[in-house]
Image 1 (tube, rainbow, N blue to C red):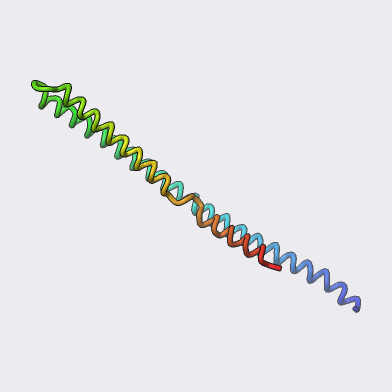
Image 2 (image 1 turned 120 degrees about the vertical axis):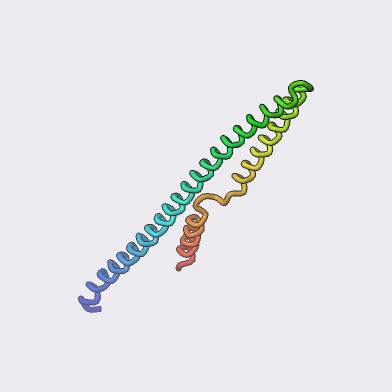
Length: 131
């Protein structure tokens, strides 16, 4: 081995480490960007869901109040207490059904950051398989 060979070897090793660190940094940066994009998408989706939930809840309450008043006025002379009991039971049933549907929607929703976790799992598997 000549002296130039021994001095070139640390340079090659440093260059290899630099390339490895650059690649790792680039990979980490792209994964963080993906996570940021997914976080923004999840946040917008949650905001839309909450907005539509509020709109629906306000409209439903107004409709229920209006229909209750109308039915009580129509049946006041006959059996107003029965009308109120039936309406109360029906409204409670609708509320229970709505809560069950909301719970099912939350349970069936895809997990947040699924794409980011999948990419990180692929990266981890790739790094483990390298000799």
